[in-house]
Structure formats: C-alpha cells, structure tokens
Image (cartoon, rainbow, N blue to C red; front, side):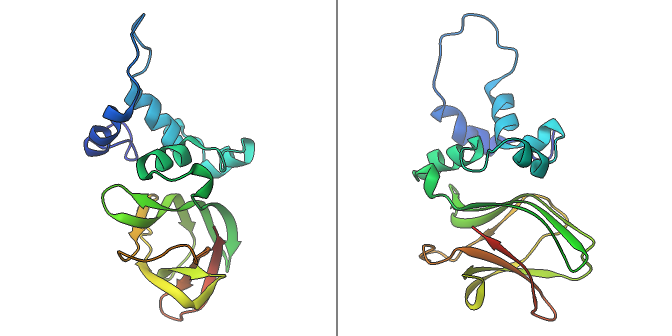
Length: 181
C-alpha cells in the first residue's frame, strides 16, 4: 500500500467484485484500486481535505458518500456527513465526520482525515441529539494519533434521533466542539 490510508487487501476484496466489468480496449493508466484510493481518500493527492471541500462542493455528492451508500444500501442523500474546520479553546479541529454503516460491524461514526492540533487533554465523543450530552451515546475516546478511525455504535441502536457528534474533555466533561451532521 503506497499510503497508510489506502484500501486494505480486505477492503479491496469486498469492493472489487462490486465494480462493473468492462472490456479493455487498451491498457489502463491506473488500476481500479488506484482510482478508488484517489476518489475515496483525497489525502493520497496530498491535498488537505478541508481545502478540497472548500474548493469543490463534494460533501453532498462525494464519491466517498456514494461508495458508503453502495456498501450499506443507503440512499447517498440520507448519509449524515459533516466537514469540520474550526478552532476551539486554542485547538484546531479539521476533517470529515460521517454517521454510516461499516460493512464489517454495523453503525459507526467515521472520522476521516480528522486532525486535532494543539489540544492538550483527552477527548471523548458522544453521538447526541441537538448537542445534548444527556441524550447521547458515549462512543469513547478519540484516537489523536490516527487521522482516520471509526467509533462503533452499540448494535441495535436507532441512529435516526441523533444529529450531532459532541467532543468533550474527558477529565472536565466540558463540551469542546459540537459537530452538526
């Protein structure tokens, strides 16, 4: 894998059979796997995701969203996605947050290319209704070391009432950032 965020062999084994087969008229310049890596993971182009979103309106119609919809059977317009580029309490938060279906494990909150800069404490994520932590599901600690990770939602949870992800300081329990999905 050329990038740490490239499709794994396991992911590729799931995706490859779903792709349309086309008669080759000439040798391709890029493999289908390379094309998907570029479409699903824009960081392989060394372009900051937040800059890409600002330059092109890809959030509502992104290949990543369409891919997730194909894998989960959802309508792409129904997959809650938020692009974050905010500064709070001296820290910077940027990346994409997606409430979706993981083909291997049910409902999850994906943090894709999610960077947290200059935050000294530990953060806990909550899936909440209107940012209210009292009406939320504790998703656990955020992984500051990896820019792309997922936090599973307990099996059987109806995610329809939840429209925000709240990041709070683990120690003080104070809200640091509310992300509207």
